[in-house]
Image 1: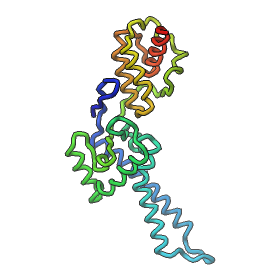
Image 2: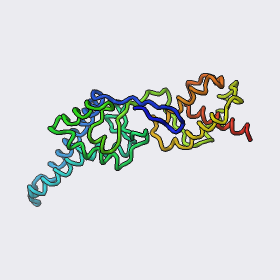
Image 3: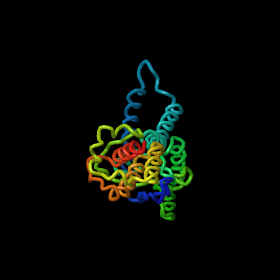
Image 4: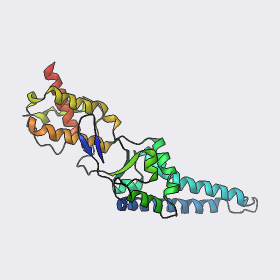
Length: 250
């Protein structure tokens, strides 16, 4: 999936294939089966007939079980994707994530929309409609993805797990990381590129912002003679560069 960002950097996100998505779905299904089984046992124990309490009406009990089954089967995916930024337990294990076509994180309504269509995609019970639809387009999107405008992508494995949330600040204690760098070579265009990214990064999913930060650092690294720093996220180094470059111009 190629996204043309405002930083004029073509961002390429690896699209998740049917195989990895199936494995993630299989893990999520096992979790759902376990939840339903435990709930069924608890309901049986709690609502079994007692000498002083009659058994619940079959219709009422069936309605409760049907509602619970629907919530577990369909609300499970929407809930986790909404609160876990596009991931379910299965997707997290397989390092997959649902994002918008623009690379932005999915919202709750996006998750609800794509998972309501799971009813159609799962026909006739083995996701045949969803698989056929995914095979017929280059981004492996099922009907739910088309409705919600989403894509499932694979996450890059990064050697760090830090996340920076401010434009200038986290890098204050790490200015030594720029020792020996030729910051005088930072042009106004370079600074505009960096600050465009820093100002809008909170609108991007974690994987996308890391990918863009890495590409920006690759573009500036050789130009500025930046030392190799595998222990620091590119986003933090970029913050340091921007802060120092801005300070030298004031």
